[in-house]
Image (cartoon, rainbow, N blue to C red; front, side):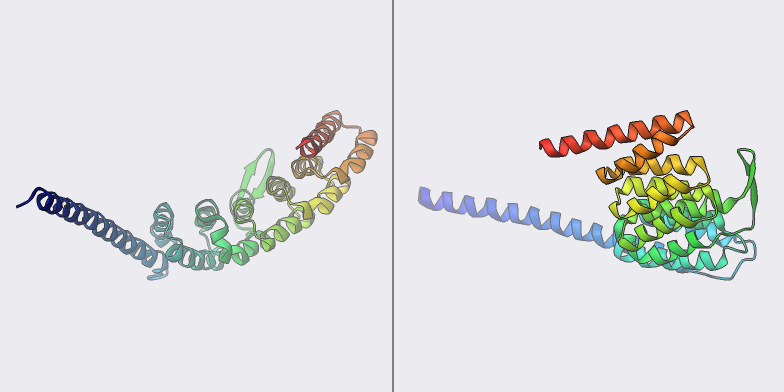
Length: 268
């Protein structure tokens, strides 16, 4: 056998071994993906499994934990429809209990899936728009429904993370009209984090006219995060007539922040 032939055979052998190893890796990966898909499907089936309706809502913990486990795996194609349907069911059941699970599942959709959870937006809006006046809790010297600290505020955060047009419109509406000032504050904070330019008119109105000073402060901070120079005249007008020192200081900080950011954009 010639030297050239030996080199050729050795090369062929090396290529065959390498290709075999690569195929083993691909097969192993496909096997792992199949196992993950199977686990995701099983978890989704637990989420959807209504079983027998338990008047004490003991079935909800198992299903909510399945949601949280499913979210850790991603699997958005399988997870989002199942979790969204479960959220809708929880909302229907919420007046007989289960508000904690409503908050936890809303949080899963917002934090784990973001914009991919857009199908859940209509349900999150219904949660935000429909207070569940069932359980009172005492906080900061006042009585409130637990819903105000869990379900609706978590729904606001989920809507912020999803960030669709409908989600932003719902946040603007809550900030402008909700009867609970804490919800208005949370909505203003969310709009500021989103940097929603379309929220500027409503935020400006809240800064000028809301009956609760904390809401006005939150609106000013949100305007600073949005960063539109168009609001500076309104901010200056309020700063001039405002009697609360801390509020005046916040307005001054916001004006300075907006001007600084405007200069930075211009200099780029």
